[in-house]
Amino acid sequence: MAEYETRLTALSHGGGCGCKLSPAMLHELLAAMPKMQAFPDLLVGTETGDDAAVYRISDDQAVIATTDFFMPIVDDARDFGRIAAANALSDVYAMGGRPIMALAILGMPLGKIAPETVSVILAGGASICAEAGIPVAGGHSIDAPEPIYGLAVIGLVHPDRVMRNSGAQAGDVLILTKPLGVGVLSAALKGGALDAVAHDKAYAALVASATKLNAVGAELAALPQVHAITDVTGFGLLGHGLEMCRGSGLGAKVRFDALPLLESVADLARSGTRTGASDRNWASYGHEADLSPELAEWQRDLLTDPQTSGGLLVAVAPEGVAAAMDCIRAAGFDRAAVIGEMCEGAVRIAAM
Image (cartoon, rainbow, N blue to C red; front, side, top):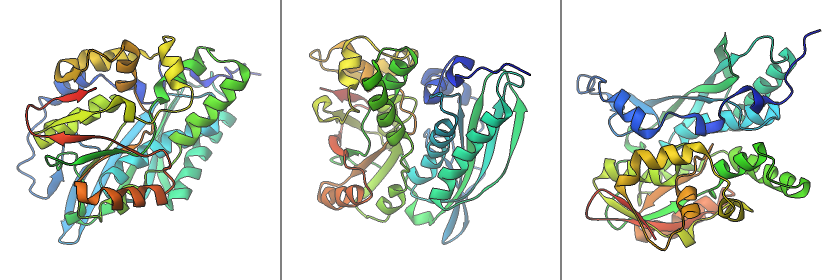
């Protein structure tokens, strides 16, 4: 009988959205991509680093297409599948749409992982898709050196309700729907930095946050005062905030003391728990960020901490904040918070 590795995270060199290529590398790779002007119905392509592609098929309907996959962020097979699926679905919600079906993307190291474990991963992903009201209608699998799982997702949206990351306006208030710290928590869990009680609490907090669907994005898109949405994932809050700044031609200001954080994350970060992706993120875009000298290095680490299935970053006119927050809270995001604002000036993001 084959001997299989029981810890999924031991089979991979990284995990979750921390596996993403750095923003600098991605920019370099996409620089040579052809321009999309030849396709007038392609409403959203690669130009602004948005969350998904959007193609108009009629005056009242557009298709959203996205794909997202990564290596295990947790050892529990079902939770890995659930987190990966929720993360992939988030791209459709961030565009203001609703998913209609998904295809599974699967790469598994044959001989190192039990077939029964792979089945549990797939079942976990399917359970999240069922929660979203969609089928996993097929997929593709390969023998890979490290375990990989995710989804390609198709969604629909009205062309007039597409939420780009480039639509923010000066004076818009920034709302973050989920607390930060998934990267720090995953590093602490993998590194054994927590005692048994703290481990269980941290794990429960990570899974609860990362498996909560961002379906509220479709509801926010219906509010006329909401101008832009993006989801905060592997590039961290600063990185995805900068994408919103670049697309909108604006600057942004974020208040660190307003940021919601997952339980115990601040203490872990102060003690030096961090991810390598946090450093890669800062190396990629730190020159476009203005951090207050009062912020410590651990606070910078949290601003660049890679989030897996993180929250939505929402830019909304001041008069629409109450309605947006009511919508977000009604959807169960009780840690959502106003964290800053968009402003005229240089295309940079400031944190204080």
